[in-house]
Image (tube, rainbow, N blue to C red):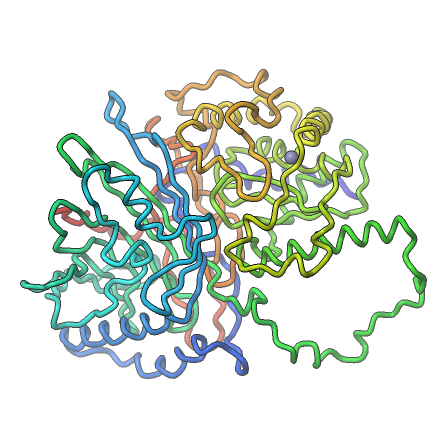
Length: 592
Ligand SMILES: [Zn+2]
């Protein structure tokens, strides 16, 4: 093993300050695979049949609208075959004395979108019909409609989008990232019997796909409301733009005599390429293996020793679990980000003279709730947790606890080595897969982790890690769904906090100090490619905070992805750069 200097990658966590709005996730920079010629789902072959006809420029506004409508119908047809993961995290807000809004409670939803019969979703977290549930929670005595056809409709502007139902008004041309768009205001014509979209659409000016729409539905039913949303699509395949991010926000929405509704929510979609994730691996992949690939075992042609057999058995359980989580779309495929995490683990091990023979791995769970756990020798950190960790010392703290489980030889339940244990519907994943440890194992891991950290390059910065824990402890009562883990142990269960001995070394929390960043907003660090699930660190540059209000620890912010266009010529590698908001800020939609 080799010591890798901490300084060589500390730039990754040099985020003294970060402007959340500018740092929102943009798509990740991985090359997307070319469409397969054989065995591909209908979804993947369909765009190619339609794509060639679109490049002619439309002469008049009327023709543009015709093309937009045509493309949107194609989009709806396409979405019926798509089954991405869909995650919504919502924070209810309250105003403090100085007019700043902060979360008072939160809600979480994870499911798989199924539009084969209109927008619908299959829940992973045990509650059907998020739209209904959220409505019940928010409305109290008055009925409040989330969306006409439920929550998942925020991905579709109108399932029956027809020019005869709407008035269209051209506003201007505008760039969203590198993509030039036509900005068009859309309003339902008088006398519509059902609620229709009202707001603004951004249409890319080559193929006339809607890439962003922002508004609500009208007319609202009596005594109720439709929520407002800002919905973004990314160019995931040549000629194909698919929903990736939706921001929802309502402030001071009067829902009753004295009841105000005030919340913000982020919805993310990912896991579109089920085939690439190995959901439907083909038998032909086995048949084409060449004879040379037969394993040469001449050196080790012996049965495994009892100890080796035990290790191999545990490894089989680990691989089964990791493989299953990846295919479902919960775990990102192996990435360079994993290597960054492993480098920190390596620093901890080397400085403590521990040699795991390189047998440890790191992977990213794609969900928002803050959690970390181990599956055998695989350390898993959630996207949400990576997002909010303010610096490398805090990251080292999380990784030290998980590394300690491996060093102490805490076992994985090997029932997962039996493949039938992996036969269950995806939506039961959180119930069937459980990587929780006993309280005794947790305490032992904490003690060992402190030992690892005190001998590590992070030993002088543990006050920062303690500060993160303090902030987490302080905000936890308002954010139970962000703190609640789905697969591992809680970092803070309301009573005990992980690595609690670090709290003592932390300075006092000071909300007013701009140079004290105890935690970051959600969404600032990790970018997920919604097609391939590849993750990478955001390239957004740190931005100096202008006021304490911009700290927004553990909070939700709007999305401003930097849109890019995939080339249609086949070489569909694309460089996603991020961070600057669109060249022109969109006007706020009139909430009336
Ligand atoms: Zn643990």
